[in-house]
Length: 400
Image (cartoon, rainbow, N blue to C red):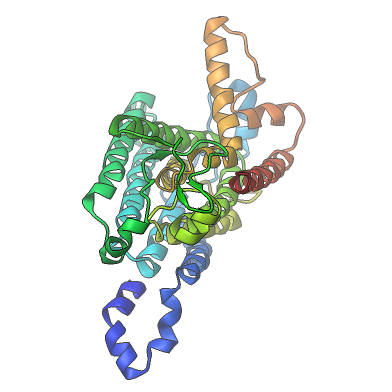
């Protein structure tokens, strides 16, 4: 809103000599960092009244679990409200509405990903957490296949429209520069692969370009997989929020690189025209996650629930897909992959052996907790590992 207002009044502001007072809004670096600060402020300021409202609605029992071995741990969290993801998603949307260029296609698609998955998660949370109010026999949340239908459907739509975006035409500035901009928005960016060949900066002839079907498949796998992986990691105070915040800071660096042709070509990574506003979105995600930790750190006063975890995982995957850095995002999200992998292994092994287990309990953070680690040790060590993985992911950009 503020950026659009600036753009609409730019000529008048210049003529009136007032442009110098607001010219900072033209710097996307400033708007990205401002979005981080603003979303942090929104979550911290609105946290207490939101928590009180959730408690009045009796949206609690966040610690309920079917695992007998976790019931004692879960009982201590039984009265902590969940569905706090409304704080995170609301802060992100409010920040980008104020500071981003809402006309940009990739930003609009990112907002759709957030809203779609947040509504899906909220509906699931509401069914689970108001079941007692609705009486016996009420639905205990959405079935797994029902959530998958909406997640896969979103992945199909995102993959289709993101793939067709280059065919829809560039804006006026990009049209003028089109001969100098090799289009790599469909490239399969493999680990340590050079997108450009220096010093000529021509495209690497060994690049693999994806067709519509393969691009959509990657979109479905990324969005569905990451949204569920973050959801599985949301089981301890501050775990999902802190880990997602660290990954989003790494993504902030990647979006800055992908939007600038000179930097992308210098680092030999894909340059994605008109993806610049994703830096504002990523900054807002980072700030909202850090702000949520204010209320979610141990002992947590609120949990994000499916409302926040599904949306955050989906938007991380979406940003990685658009800037063609899927494998770097997967490296940075290693903790989430371990959590999801532990559940898949546990379930598969349990069914194959008719009752035997690999882990004490899945996801993996519960295995460690039951093995003697305190909850704070698990969370902080997972944060440390994530920061190291973010560094490794970013370092791989330079090792080309």
